[in-house]
Length: 380
Image 1 (cartoon, one colour):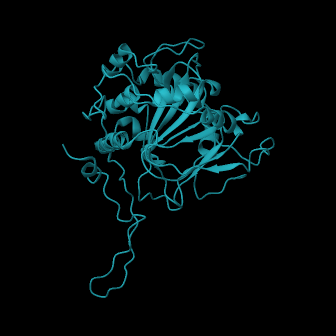
Image 2 (cartoon, rainbow, N blue to C red):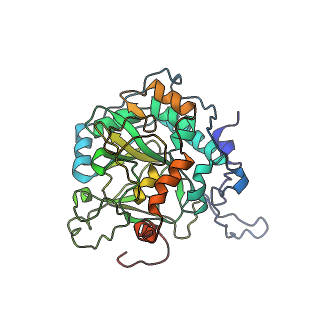
Image 3 (cartoon, one colour):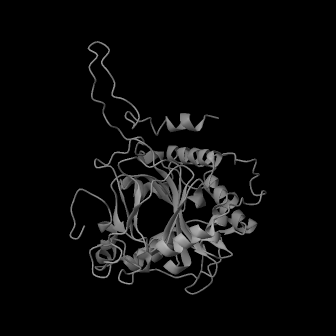
């Protein structure tokens, strides 16, 4: 089996420019040469996409036996929980050790080497070098991470609850343009009060760009609609929070947790070229007591495209939203492994049908506004 580094050097390619590397020198003249900046990850070709379930047979760390070993635990301080409740965001340093980071990097390397069809829309749009929603459904390594790591234990402490399910998740590699001030509305079929947003980082943030910036306390605002994405921080009602900017320099193994309504942004490189990695496993966790909220007809439905059969107002209890605390359920894991869990073309057509018509553009205007670009938008 090739090492993770050798895999990353195949389709991903090694960067021709890095933060730490000095410019090359001409062997004859001794004069420094200009080094061309190049993406660290190449865009997949159309024929490189894969379908169905993917299992790259990556061994779990710490001697964990797949589907047998109980999930790990991690103690969170009461102070950290209070910071989240007060500021709407908290950074937990070093939650996952080097072995877990290497495991996730290896899983990410294999996934980007063998891109899945469900990443096509986000990757082809060039929003990210690679992005795939509900990665746990198709990639067994990430499902195993949720089943066996301490992520569920951390989230249940931060949410002061006794059960955690994954509402939706994302594997994200290098946001090319960044994202302007926004709040998250792709949280699966739950409302903000029922969820916790999370990031699990595999790399250090570059010095000049890429670090998330939050308006602390902004989750308490009552002027931004829960369906909105783009946020004009100069709008009336945000005066209390618009200057409360906190920058988070994250590193490998850190965990960033925030309230779904906390306003934040990420600035990408000015030229849209990442010559280092910023690999993140992120998503939204559903706390105990969460209900299923049918978001058909709104942009929020894009993170709920499975044919699970749940009806509006029912308890969120389904293998499509797997329990990870207090422990994973074997029957849910089996449904995932057998391909029962996943996106269904009929359900996609049915749910997205509510977005058709002349009002569709208005529904998605806020989403497209959030994309960072060189074009200036009013109020940004």
